Length: 205
Image 1 (cartoon, rainbow, N blue to C red):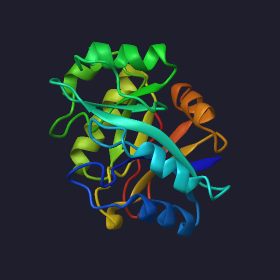
Image 2 (cartoon, rainbow, N blue to C red; image 1 turned 120 degrees about the horizontal axis):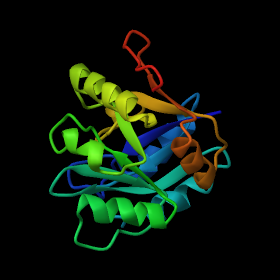
Image 3 (tube, rainbow, N blue to C red; image 1 turned 60 degrees about the vertical axis):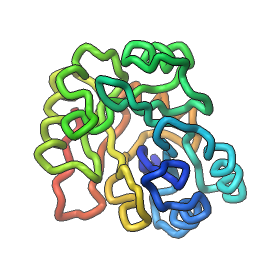
């Protein structure tokens, strides 16, 4: 079992202040969250550098990924080191993930830039049911959606600053291996967790 923050932005996203080195330091210092998906906005330029920094630690894993902005809403792709080909429609992005054996996730579906009800016809593999930057009600709507669609529900902090890292994370029945993590998400071997024990964690769909 591992714990991973599946939605993190670095300074390669224009609205984030998290330096790649700082992310690795925070993972190294954390007691149990040892994996993080770097999902910068519409770019993979920082992945090689972040993965190289993480390689110095045997117990830390960076999951390569990207958050793609489509006209309908944002989609996370985990497992890729490259951008999907344009145009970035929901169908094209989800198809790219499927063909590459990556995993597609509807990011914060009921917040700004989320897919909302379009998630139902999107074909994504999973839904972000616990987003660190979303209001509680939006997360609850996402949880209900995942349950109704019988899709796995995952958690990511959506951190843009150090203070936001690991506020929520995903418990996975997996080892520290990208392929295994992707398989675990697709098979629903996941549990969203709020780091603050007073916060309500969604039940597994």
